[in-house]
Amino acid sequence: MNKTMLIVMREFSERVRKKSFIITTLLMPLLMIGLMLAPSLIMLYGKGSAKRVVVVDRSGLVAGALTSGDELLFETLEGMSVAEACTTYDDESDIFAILAIDDDVMTNPRAVKLITNSSSSITIEEAITSQIENIVEREKLKAYDIEDLDRIMAEVDTHIDLETVKNNGTGDLDSMESTSSGVNYILGLVLGMLLYMIIIIYGQMVMTSVIEEKNSRVIDVMVSSCSPFQIMMGKIAGVALVAVTQIAIWALLIIGASKFVVPAVFPTEVAATSTGMMSAMIGTFSDAGYITMLFGYMLLFILGGFLFYASMFAASGSSVDSVQDAQQFNTIIMLPIILGIIVMMQVFNDPNSDMVFWFSIIPFTSPVVMMARIPFDIPAWEVILSLVILYASFVATVWIAAKIYRVGIFMHGKKPSFKELWQWIKMK
Image (tube, rainbow, N blue to C red; front, side):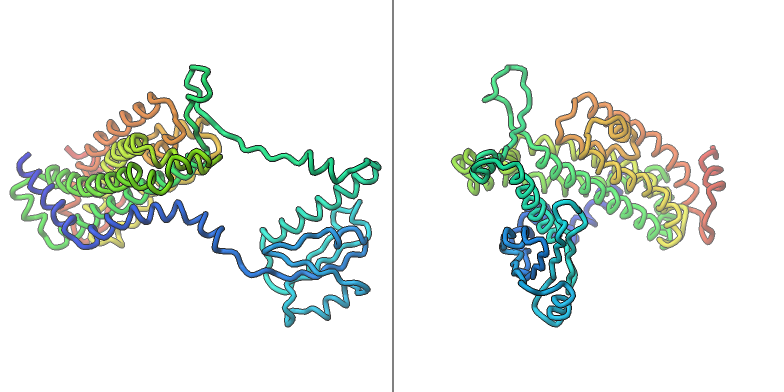
């Protein structure tokens, strides 16, 4: 154990003293916050200039009812055909598009065409379509000769701000905790992607370290004092300690922000007047206990997932002489992690579906998928079962990887086939 600990501390100290580790550790919490705020900032400041749209309306029903806004400015053309409008307002003019409306717009869903002079977007097309649909619907309602129709339509126009709360079994709605699938989505996405990046980055760090020491013949010297298993476990544990240290620092920074910064930026009176997703976000990110729980689970799954995959990366690195040669094995190792990212997207549609459940239990994908499910308040026994299987699988994976590692570190000049790897595993 003393020899293994020496290797662990060497791997740990070599990495934590690098400037890249310090910079990444300090900047990552800011990057995580930025990623969560980016969609709102883009929507707020990413709007382009207003686009002018000239309207040729042969029906005489739509053009006058179109409403201009910050993104679209409608101008009605009188006494001009569509062909004339296209030649008059071409791509050299400052007109974005010609909106052509046929006289059968009330009965023909394809009676509207948007003739653009530059690239259009889904947002613009949906905004125009939505306005025309509302106008046509109102015109059809007028055919029923309903008195005071505009006032009736204004009165029946309704907006529902749905609030989701977690049932606590008391029947007291005021005491139930507010939840939001949108906030859970953001948390699950960030946590799942973070686990994916850490497993890939730090796992390949183990592989690269093994290849470098194998090529420099350092391992040949180390084996005279330590067993191959001690060397492999020392490297894996040392890099794992680096990852855990980094996550622990992030946890302290973010928990501190949720405890002191969020309440200062969003005081009680602001949180009380907020509704929907904003209220849930303020409540979630100001709950230091909940954030601490998430980071606790993250540490467990990062450690288990990293140990599980790092042993395979170590075996891959020991069996080749260069990073390029390792790509054949790395592709196979990374495929389950990529599959986990794909399944993680299904978590946001139904976090309790059978497929999502099993992928959160299978150790090859469970770190990413289960971490994405945890914000959705899944049963504790599922999390515990996933962790038990993950750590048990790590023990089995280390045993197999050690078999390859003890032979591979002495092999030079030839990349082994899968058949030869199987023979190494069976070797006593």
